[in-house]
Image (cartoon, rainbow, N blue to C red; front, side):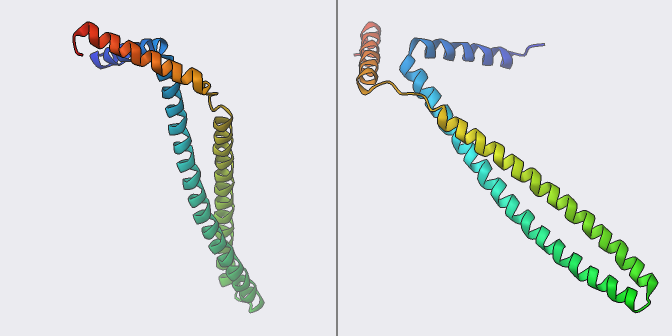
Length: 158
């Protein structure tokens, strides 16, 4: 069931589309602004992914240091004949190694997401609309101003 808000949104979308079809310069400006907004959002996302990756790397380094420490402890306990302690240390070590594998997988996923964002930024840069030549752009602006003046005169505003 469609609500009045959905109907209003469709009506506004239709009016915007009609306006943009009848005003190619505004359509071009709208598209350029949309691309700029998209690029800014992608750059923010890239920066956030870089920060997350740096944090993940630090955590991974910490886990690696713990693994080294518990590997030494496990070895010492085995050499000392403390089998129960060695077994518990080995279980803890295996948990740390699983944690390290999970963190490594998370870092790999971040790397893939970063590559996707980079590819989107590259595609966006390549899609930058070819602007009209200066003369064509100036002419379109002149025509738009002329039309605006005509509408003002017709409405008695100037």
